[in-house]
Amino acid sequence: MEFILAIAQVNPHVGALQENMRMMLRQIRAAQAAGAALVVFPELVLTGYPPEDLLLKPLFLQRLAEVEQQLHRELATSGVDVIYGTVRHGGEGLFNAGVFVWAGQEVGYAAKWRLPNYSVFDEQRYFVAGDRVQIFPYRGVMLGITICEDMWHTGEPLASLAAQGASLIINLNASPYHVGKQQEREEIIRQRIAEHGLPVVYVNQVGGQDELVFDGGSFVMSQDEHGAVQRIVRCQFCAEDLRFVRVGARMEAPILLQALALEAKEAESEGTVEEEVYQALCLGLRDYVGKNGFSGVVLGLSGGIDSALTAVICADTLGAERVEALMMPSRFTSVDSLEDAAEEAAILGIRLSEISIDPLFAQFRQQLAPLWQQEGETAVGEDVTDENIQPRIRATLLMAVANKRSKLLITTGNKSEMSVGYATLYGDMAGGFSVLKDLLKDMVYRLAAARNRWAVARGQRPPIPERVMHKPPTAELRPNQKDSDSLPPYPILDAILERYVEQEQSPEQIVAAGLDAETVRQVIVRVDRNEYKRRQAPPGVRITRRAFGKDRRYPLTNGFSVR
Image 1 (tube, rainbow, N blue to C red):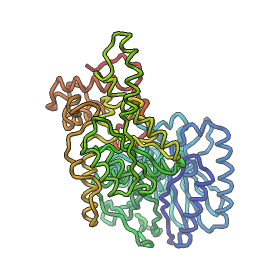
Image 2 (image 1 turned 180 degrees about the horizontal axis):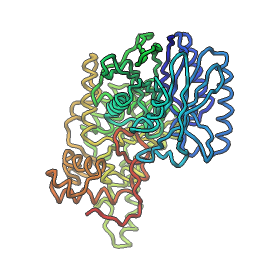
Image 3 (image 1 turned 90 degrees about the horizontal axis):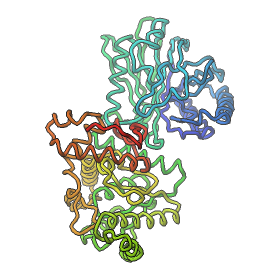
Image 4 (image 1 turned 180 degrees about the vertical axis):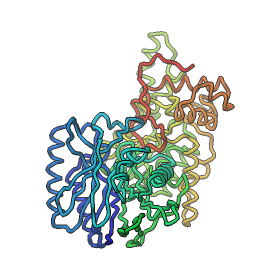
């Protein structure tokens, strides 16, 4: 007996229950038209992942139950059976569940055993763990359902499923992206298949949710007749997709799995790190803007590398017509910066307006001067106070334009700067979303260079001017200022930050890796004392294992020192 199984890699909207149900029904109709009998959706697809404290709201759970009843009525006449992620009430709380609906009737569900409570995950706040397994006979195949983390461990529940006769594992996922995550997923599933010999259908969510990006990459793996584990099909990355596999029950194991090329689009090849990160940034930005209902974005375009890359990502993601930039020069702004910003805006086709901040800056200095004189303090213009006034003026102008246009203000700072507090609170940190928040400076340059290469390969003009790629980074808040006046060279800074922030290494371990002890000490001091700034920064796309946000939750008032 054979049937066609459809993998529905979809982009749910957290909390939008009716919208998510309609999305599922569209995929079900498309799968039915292709001859599929069974459609598999990701983890918590109806609620979207992660639903967080929506699950503590009784009205939300009531609406979810009503939507599921409606979905099941639709499925009763669809001729298609479905496995999807949702919640179910257990004896002591909620289960994170995978539900099997056959001919419109729920025949059972599997509860998630392994509830992750590390990194960005907080599932033990909302769910209780499952402790039983159920096999679902379907067209000659014995289906076992597992959910995400269940497959990342040896033993249960997979061992019990194998012992009870499962012949195909359906694994529902909402697995967020970081660099190298797809390779990790596929290696883990290869290990589980090697342990039990059971083929796996791994279906993952796609889309952006706050700082998280779900990159999709759903796949099917099985052992061949020689016992070698092979990938049979894989969905696209960072895009919705619908793929099909022919499943045939056989008397001997393993069961037959065969990919069906029912669609022309194929994205099976591995991409470069720059390509995958760029796709993730675009997806995270697109969904944050779209799902929150903004008409477009506004950003400051300074003529530097960070704002240049941010502008390109915004234009690529949203279209040039939805991106507006402001150049806000002061007496410290170089002619090169003015020219570079204008050139990039012209290449991208985005709107660029220029507003000098000098008159406003002079007003601030005039108003504050009597206060400083009265207190006998340093006059404005002679310390960092003067520097910080400038980005705060710029932030006010940017917010005014964003409010007037009903657009989202995008900040342009990177992880290197944010780590050490080289950013102005309520100034260049002000905004609603940060595209480069989790990118060290080295990755900013790598993406900028890659984007220019891609343009040349397509016969287009590189969007980031060559001079921007090579000029020394500067905030241009005082005469002849360079970032290197206040920070170690970025390659050294990034090497320390990668070890201290992302790998949680001690100062001794970092120094043992060959980095200067005093430089390490200075950087760590700045990282530790600027937690309060980072806590007030806007959300941004997560691309590493250790982003500022849900990943890293240090107390603001903190007496512990690693030094």
